[in-house]
Image (cartoon, rainbow, N blue to C red):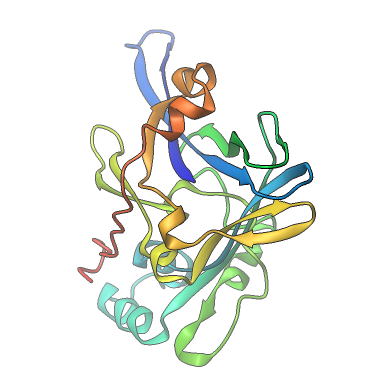
Length: 234
């Protein structure tokens, strides 16, 4: 499988001002499936589940108190070790029947169409529910609410943020096993091993939609997880 950042660049025109260039980001994947059995199989879903570490900026925006030094919130963050629990589902965009006796198919999945960053909440609840999406490893507390709305930063890290997100990597949680991809085939979940997940790729949305799944799959590189959180220097 190859995870993808899909990108849409566009220009916004305003009355009495210069046009503004903007970029939107989405999440997609290409899954390669081989069928060694003697019967046809149907691939119905690609799923993301598991726990991801909450970055400090997200924690601070939810729990930071006005007037308190940022250091106190940072110490609390490092002590409690907050995380969120993902539960995402995507359905095949391409032909998903795999014939018997060694047939192979490549299937595109879309978790999130390109949109402005930070638009999505942590899950499907209201703003007042924000703290209920957090669990804490240090206290053995699990989140009350699953994070069901995909967010680019929940699956990718980036080496460059300006003028736009570039040099993407799959988050380290997917290499370490605390988060995972699973393919649902004939109602049975098949977790994808670390070696089955290739390096994250970047594609303009027009190219993603026009390319064949095979071409998108073989564009991939090896898995290179990045675990540093630049907001706290850890």
